[in-house]
Amino acid sequence: MGNSKYIKNGSEIIVVPGHIAAAAEWWANSITAPTHDNGDTTRNGDVGSFLAMLLCAGNPVTKEQAEAFKLALIESLMEVMKDRSYFSIHVDYHPDRILAEAAREAGITSTQCFSWKTSMNISEDKVEVSEGYAAPRKVIWTKED
Image (cartoon, one colour):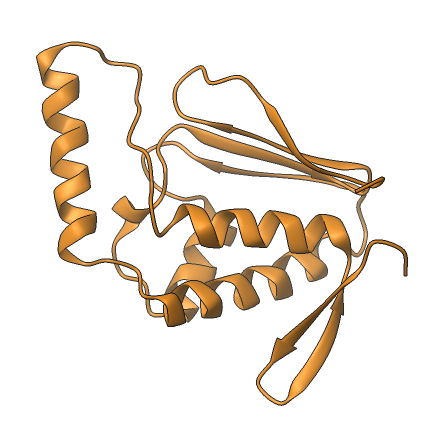
């Protein structure tokens, strides 16, 4: 398996396709330091972002939870991408189903620990993400990496 990653899950080593490993790693890092950019540059927008930041800071994601989240997300992505070559994950103000389920499995209770207005496109050739309102897409992994 070219571009695969070997990830330890307890006493087991699992082989994870590169695009899935890159996607899960990005989200696991993101939930430990989320951005709350909803595009509202007014005082109300600043207050909303600040309150979300406080909610997340009051219930931070631990390293152990981030690792458990990553493993749960890998498992879900490997299952969902068995029959497809493309998948998208999104957060508006709350995570979509696949992210919410991985968070729940990891014991993460605050949905404010996800970056607002964020989307990720995952394919076997590349993974790209847009983090925040109207943020440009950035390629975070390619098959050639």
